Length: 88
Image (cartoon, rainbow, N blue to C red; front, top):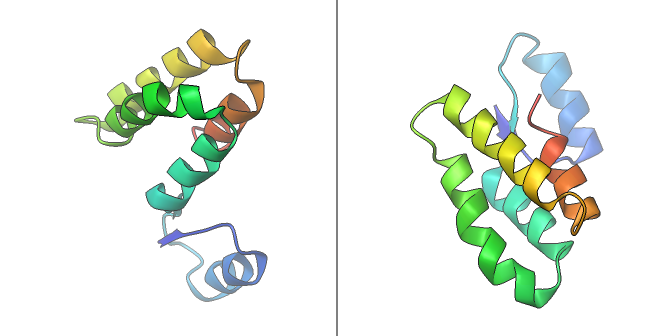
């Protein structure tokens, strides 16, 4: 089940589709991450996050995400916290 973080929608999904696998909408997630970055950094970060989202497999995507967080957390704390929220 793909959705944004709308609280009412999330609650309805949990109630109706109890066993559904849930993941965030990648377009919304990308926008949320980029909105927390300075304009200059958005140009550098967008392809890196996109590459992570479309990694060949889950393990590689998670590894790329952790590498991004480690690399950029000191400079872009808020954006990396946003990215980290859905990696677990």
